[in-house]
Image (cartoon, rainbow, N blue to C red):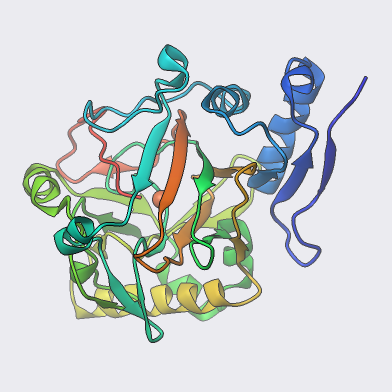
Length: 327
Ligand SMILES: [Fe+2]
């Protein structure tokens, strides 16, 4: 029986694996499925290589790790290819045109370049009380240069982080908002926002009535490892310390995360159309480096259910399935 082939993503990283040999036959093998789940728990992210580039396959691989979480907004485009099967596949497709550029594609200036699709370090759904367990992404159309997705492991980040700084934030909750405007971002700013994203008016309406969410900056897994899990993007303050001192601490930690994101602590994935990447959203941080606005880009994402139960809304209410797509 043909099995799968597993290797480390990079020899100098303690997270991430590459898996080859995923096809309909290997996916049907319960032994392989269990092997993948264990690998994912241990390594935090998996890059599947040479996978059939279809929504059907994306859904099938995603379901190895848990049930899909459909996107609650009805207007978010679904992949048409698989009909019912693709209920959880979100299609993020940017086609460059003069109109799109005029409407604002969230352009930023970063290290002398003008970039579209730039996303600072974050974890998904931080503005919500409930997190998703994992995200699964593929990119059938990507820019010929730029457009990489960056990943950092919170477990490794915790181990490597300067202890004095880490001690100051451990035990605190970070406050997050649904307001995703990069021009309002407060901590770790290393770019200049040039235009707002075109969805801003709709998002702002919802952000105005959405309660703020709290998540611990450091949390401990059942297996004992501590995880540094702070999203500089969408963070607005430190719980019980919404003052200059709290802001200064969040800024210092964010700048340290940026610094590590440029160095050897991070993995930046350069997309091939047959790649499929899954990451643990309770553990990893991710970012998008952005690309020139003239390039077309398509990413398709599925989201896997499963919360870590440590987040909550400021007003103590459970809003449930109120999520917005932000990145
Ligand atoms: Fe994201």
